[in-house]
Length: 140
Image 1: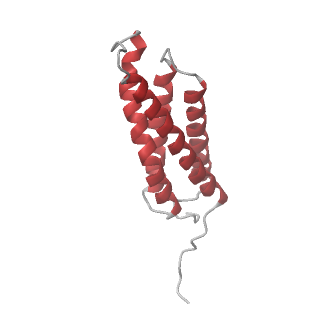
Image 2 (image 1 turned 90 degrees about the vertical axis):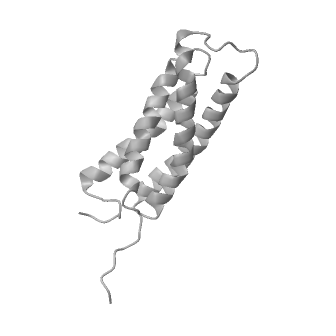
Image 3 (image 1 turned 60 degrees about the horizontal axis):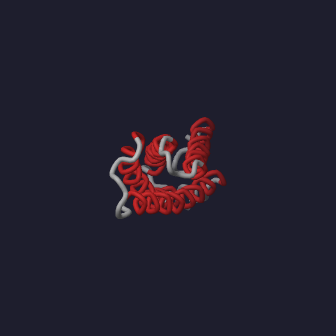
């Protein structure tokens, strides 16, 4: 019998994949609603000083929303790039959440929820790196 790598995924990887899918859906709804508000006819370009961050934050949120399912697929298939791309994606997600906390006209629970999901994913990845699990699901 050949020496093959086990394709079992740890329970924590499944939790990260589910959180990434939830994050992708929430970020898509968040970014599209923010873009609709920004592009509303008759709305002044800059209402408050913090509104200048709304456009770039909506764009980054849309990129995060579109990248989340791709990275979740990379973790599901245990690609070697999945772990590192997840960390990068969550750093972007935390940055969008911090920028959107300064936005005056938005509900505060949406960016806080997105930041909590990003923090949970980063904590799970950190725990995996502490116990020595790699992206293939095997110990180093």
